[in-house]
Length: 347
Image (cartoon, rainbow, N blue to C red; front, side, top):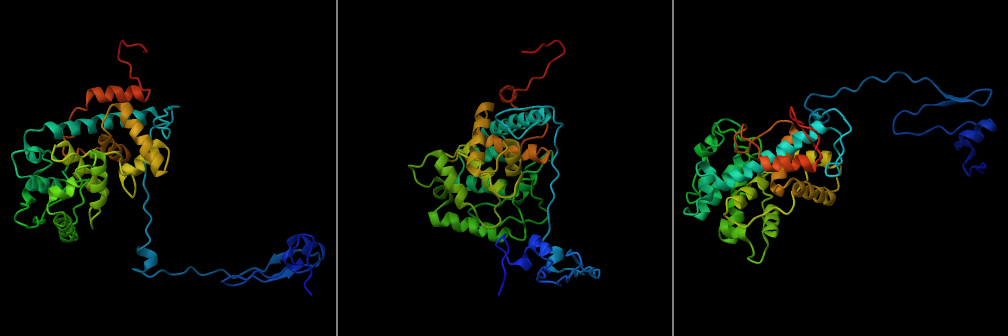
């Protein structure tokens, strides 16, 4: 009959009582080799030495060696100088905060350029005299391919573009996608076919992006973003497309949230800077930060992307463009930053 100890365990399973009563512990059974226990004359148990295990060879090309890769991201961080701000509780460096303020101001400048540009592809999208289907298709290609960070960021898009009426896909030979684009020539046929099918279900691109006439601009943005989750269409490309369509005046679209989720620079940066991973709180803090900086919420998307990656991308705006001075000043004040000039004193 099994005997139980004062700890309500089988005696041979209790490391305390088995020692006191000189009872051998029950061997531990595992999926691998078991290690036999031996009982010494004083009641102590110790494992018998096991022979060394030979390393397991992993074949080249096996799932263990290729399919499970770990991506390590090295974040550029400023030195901890005691910086604190309720708007960015994840930051401890005034250098990081200053860089974030500059990126918000740069991204705000880009939105203004989309609204006011009179030449180039942004202007072609905003041209109210053009056919709305062609303008919408051009905006899609700009977001899908993505502007480069060269001196002529739209050159490759302009060379590859086709018309909506033709029904032809662009010729991708030699085309390089931009940093925030979704272009993958191997999947592009499926992506463009899915986009055309989505538009055709509504009757046209314009009808698909407009949705219900009773929707608010925020609701229209959210619904279009959800429906553009097409094969090969990344989060950044979807967001940039809707920002371009809204700020160029084609449709009443305005971001009510940043759609922060998945594996992308903006989401990683938001979690780090805003000090939270919960999606609802993340969106709330992002909205508070944008409002405090005096910038449209959409500006925070590119700002977080650039700040988190540690490398600025213009997304169509020249990299040497001056940030929006008013937004920069307000962002610095909101974050509690102050930069003294040669004869300045503290505020």
